[in-house]
Length: 255
Image (tube, rainbow, N blue to C red; front, side):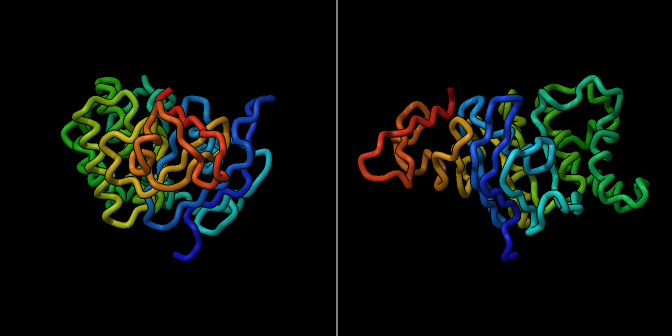
């Protein structure tokens, strides 16, 4: 509990010859809900994908639950929800089959047992998809597909939930379901790191916002809406640690 759940120190990452993360620091402590905000191309998704090892870093240190990521093996403690546009669609599988795949990290020898099937059913109930359990995923709407991806992450009963743009392209009804689901996880002590384009219905849950611009952290503190009018998207926002008289930094959250 004393060690941060997620810790990035001086993390750099490149895509080809283009630097995407330029030495960022990020700490997420037990029970926190931290949102990564920023314009498209600011490095948000790269940051969370570096945490789970999908992006190779060029420098810096990443630790999960106090363990260097390279030596971390307890992946059942981590649930990951990718961007819906990058998740496999067109997969010939039912809703239950997709959600069950998220339980494999806890299953013995890859065989789901009674407790595993119960966890899958609970995850489907949480996202309001129990009535579609036998349906093919191809028959779902975009919002329903996103619920299935979240249920897949919840099936392993993670301590850390990492979500990349969970509200993107999702209808209002599904947004409310997802917000309720997240509230349930937070109330049970889950730690959450999520990428958002805007806060939306998740705003009341956010403890801290980390704003990225051009691969650098330009704000780490209260969500921009909570720190005053000038931090709203489309307004200039001064880095909280910048010296007096410094030029304002435009966050461009919605650009």
